[in-house]
Amino acid sequence: MLKKERQAYILHQVNLHNKVLSSHLSEQMGVSEDTIRRDLAELAREGKILKVHGGGLSNSFHQGVIAQDVYAIEEKRMIAQKAVGLIHDGMFVLTTGGTTILQLARILPPELRATFITVSLPAAFEYANHPNIEVIVIGDKLAKNSKITVGGEAIAKIRDIRADLCFLGVNAIDVQAGLTDNDWEVVQVKKAMVSTAKKVAALCISEKVNTAEHLKVCNIEDIDILITELQPKSKKLQPYSSKGIKIL
Amino acid sequence: MLKKERQAYILHQVNLHNKVLSSHLSEQMGVSEDTIRRDLAELAREGKILKVHGGGLSNSFHQGVIAQDVYAIEEKRMIAQKAVGLIHDGMFVLTTGGTTILQLARILPPELRATFITVSLPAAFEYANHPNIEVIVIGDKLAKNSKITVGGEAIAKIRDIRADLCFLGVNAIDVQAGLTDNDWEVVQVKKAMVSTAKKVAALCISEKVNTAEHLKVCNIEDIDILITELQPKSKKLQPYSSKGIKIL
DNA sequence: CAGGAATCTGCATGAAACTGCATTTTTATA
DNA sequence: TATAAAAATGCAGTTTCATGCAGATTCCTG
Image 1 (tube, each protein chain N blue to C red):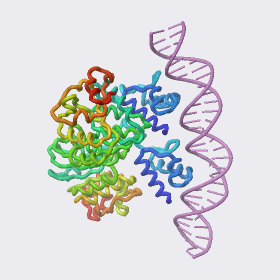
Image 2: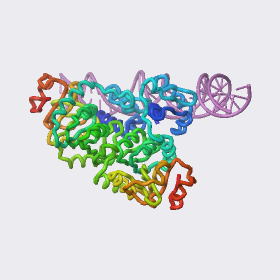
Image 3: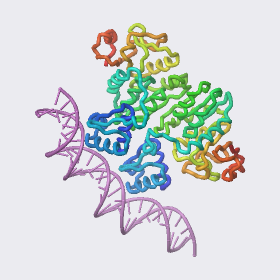
């Protein structure tokens, strides 16, 4: 088993269960606890997990339930503002979770009449605050840290929906690597969304542009629209523009 | 159970109930009171709680965040306390929404390993705070006021699940009229739950005993267990007891 | 102010982590 | 393709950490 593979697995486990035990992982993949510890240390150094005595925890533990201030909120608001312009009355819109998507959910104009389909519970709450929005929740097993539903049922259900538009909260995007993420289950969900939606819009703060994670969601060509807080003509976005992606 | 995990749980409990007892926590998670004290001391040092003789208090005075008050919270807590005794490791439990159910969700002991299936988004959030609870969300159209999913999909999915136990938050109960409610869609969901669960427990504050609404959920005979804040032998509950319902 | 409960202190123990080193695997390059 | 360099891994010995327990002390309550 490759190191990266192992770490991806650990990350997956952490994102799924919020917690991993060194002893458990060691046994599970047949390597020494030392190796696991080194993996955990590395993941912690990259800020992807929180390392504690005995194993590792999801970062969401450290950030706590309180003091939930969103990172780069202004940028995300700006992105949401641009994204909202893509939605029109009568549309069926698919969305993932993520803080950027939540911003979008908050600023939907009250007179908008559309149907939002989501796997994200927090997003569903926000959509529900809008009088004229229909909200469809996709059900399945709940991933505890991200509060999104994941699994085969969810994916099958997403595939059944021919949405007009899909908003993806993006973890990492790169011209070569395409759209990538670090949680196996989330990737499955996003893949399903990309494949079923007529148009795909990626919401991404500029900081994450030209970065990559381990797990691939889709190719850069599968994205129709890229929304960042930058000016559309910004140099950083040129490579995407020349791939035929519409920049907002 | 990891140290951080334990502390996160304590913090959650403090923020929820504004108070925790060392003795209670010790028993709940099966560690010595010394350990709890050390945890409380550490959390206090970090300024997250206020440590006092016998346990800990929320310092929300400083933060300014006050928990929303629920009608008849004490009664509901008592009901939840009784209900929790019915749940055992490995069980599949179906629940509706409602504030009584939310209380139940909050006091689940951390070591409990069970699967909770729900249509209620707020309940799903609460369940997700418990480290060893699996949460399955039933998806469908979201009813905005009650924040539960309703519709044919949801009902079909509920029917697919052979749950060991079902907790119904009860709106009105009466020996003749049976269990009744006033929201058509909620009734559909409850009906499906009653028909599929092996055991049905109704959670009901005494105030609603011997009242009726317009829409029928099920007959009184379909209920296996009735939980109120009253003593099981209370006069008000005799008619139910004599119908063969177990009173807690 | 008396009695019981909660707390603190120091210590013992087992588990986990770190350190340095030897061995294996991967990668780069001649 | 051969081979050196670099990286990854496991192991043994030592150190640190988490936790429970016993006994002394302090804190509440009636």
